[in-house]
Structure formats: C-alpha cells, structure tokens
Image 1 (cartoon, rainbow, N blue to C red):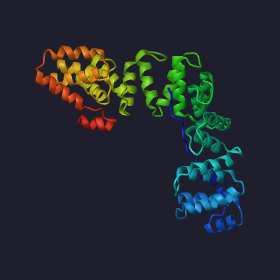
Image 2 (cartoon, rainbow, N blue to C red; image 1 turned 60 degrees about the vertical axis):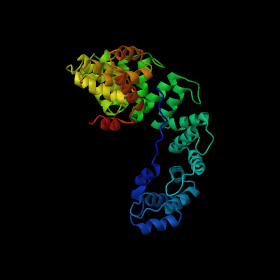
Image 3 (cartoon, rainbow, N blue to C red; image 1 turned 180 degrees about the vertical axis):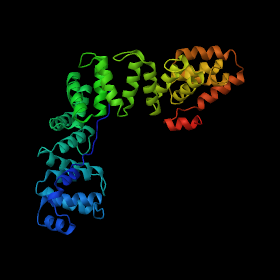
Image 4 (tube, helix red, strand yellow; image 1 turned 135 degrees about the vertical axis):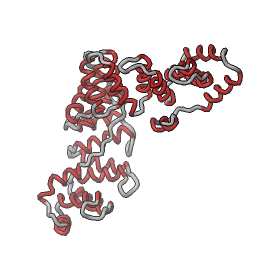
Amino acid sequence: MENEVVIQPALVALLFVLAVAPSLPQNLDGLIKKAMNGDALSQISLGERYLIGLGVPQDYDQAVRFYAMAAAQGAAQAQFALGEINRNGEGRSPDYSEAVRWYKLAAAQNLGEAQFALGVMFDNGQGVPQDYKEAARWYRSAAEQNMADAEYNLGLMFANGKGLDQDYKEAARWYRRAAEHRSLAEAQYNLGVLYDSGKGVEQDYKQAAEWYKRAAGQGHLEARFNLAVLYLEGQGVAQDSQEAVHWFRLAAEQGMAEADYNLGVLYANGQGVPRDDKEAARWYRLAAEQGHPDAGFNLGVLYANGIGVSRDLVEAQRWFTIAADEGVQDSVRAKERLAARMSQQEIEQARTLAAQWTPCKSKPACDRRMGQ
C-alpha cells in the first residue's frame, strides 16, 4: 500500500500575482517604476512575468532579481518563489541548499506551501540531511492549513511508521482530509485500502468500494484494479462480472500485468464476457510478456493443447520453462510431462527461446512485440 511521497510544486507566486493584478499598473513601465520604488507586489509581479515570459521575454536572472527585492522586504511569496527556482533549477543548476534557505524564511512566516516544500526536502534529503521526523513536523504544519498534499504525505508517514510511530488510525484521518479537501486520488485510494484491510478503521468493503470508485474515476491504476476485484467477488458492491471486466480492462490499458492476467481468466471461463479462448490467449500473452508467471503457465497450457492458438509444443515448453524458473510449481511438472512428448531438438529449441526471453518494460513495448 505504500505510495511515493507527493512532490507538488506550488505555483503560489503566480496565484498571488493573479489575485492582486487589478491593483497593479497595466503597463510594464509603470510596474517597473513601482517596483524600483520598493513596492513588493510590483516586484513579485515582475518576478513572475520574467519567470514565465508573460508580456516580457523570459529571463530567469531578471525574475530572480525582482523576487530578491521583494524577499529582502520579507515577502514570503517571493522567498518561496526563490526556493522553487533553486529547487527546480530554473535557468540554473538546482541548488537544494539555497532552496532550503529560502523555504525556511517563507515557512517561518507560516506560508503553507513553503512548509510543505521543506517537508519534501527533509523527506528526500535534498539540501539537508534526510530526517523523517523533521519532514513530518513540516508536513503537519502545512497540513494544519488544509494543504491536501501535506495531509496525504503525513498520512503516508503514519501508515509506514516513517518519522512517526506507525498509526493507521491517524493515517486514515489524514488521508480522509486530503481526499475531501482536494479529491486527491492517492489519498482516496489509500483510504480505500485501509477500509479494505480493516487497518485503522473498521473493515468495511462498501466504504472501500466507494473510495476506490472516487480514485478510479480519476484514473488511479491500483484503484481500478481493486474495484474490479470487489465487483468480481461481490464485496461492498453487488457481484457484477461485467463491471469487473470493465475495470480490469481500464487497468490493463494502463499496463497492469495482473489485470491482463485476470482478463485472460475471465475470457477463458466466460465470466462477464462470452467465452473466447483466442482472447484469453491474447490477454495471457500480454501479461506473460510483462513477466507474470501464472499467465505464462496458462499460456503454455493453451499452446500444449491448441486452445485459442495453434498447437505448438515448443512454444508451450518455452512458457512452461519461463514460469518454472519463476517458481510456478505446476509449470515445473507440466514442463517435465511435456518433455516426454518432445524430441531432444524441440526441447533444446524451447530452452534456447526461454533463455533469450526478457520481459518487456512497458505495455507499448509488449504491444509491439505481439504485433498489435
């Protein structure tokens, strides 16, 4: 269930400028005049304009110049913007130590985006020694200002016991806040996992399905797969094999081998779809090419018996060998039985093909390998 920490660059400077833009001069000369006379809002506006090339040629040095003017006056938004420029390497090499320096100045003024950014830096050990406790402290400061990314990261730290004592109940609380404040798909999915497993909350498949649906609707891969499993088993939702096929297919289209494998099983059994051995073989092959050992075994069975594919003992033995090497015991036995029906030349050919095989690294690569 562990997911990566969210690293969400917050374009606070741009949002800030847009919010105050009506009070600023519309012509560039007037804006520069006010900035040079010490107006911090004008300095921030010019920093943003030069940073993104809004009405002026993009010029990172000029952006830094105007942001620095405002930062020197204590403008937290400008300090944060300088932290972002240094972290992201805008017009220069990234300088994490300098980014941390600016983030700390802005965070000291209670700017939530800067507090969150500091949490990420301590979490990843960028510009500072890695320190999960310090990361959690800054995430909490930002989370208390209802920053969804910080709420999610704090929930993740409670769930994984990083920088904090492991506490699934607290994890669930922070995931829920992130899920509700900004409909963060990762938080919705993780909350679904907690309801699915009964960690930190009373096990409730109906709630798990609801949170999976929300995340799945945003394209979350694992949520789509888990929702398909609930529909297949009738947990938290009415059993519906067709709906399971729908969600497995969406997960498969995103490259999940386990979803490919399950679709193969459903087509082989005629569950949720008309039985179609040819389609079963296609989905097993797609999963097997990505390194799914059980799919490789099932594909071997189809080749050995000519089901959905032309009977091919060499191809069957190749997949039995690949699956057996991955520890599928049924494949070990099938490989031995099939060898008794093959010539030594065929056995050697299958062994060579298995040794040359490597899993494809992506779904497009698998599609190309399969000629799709």
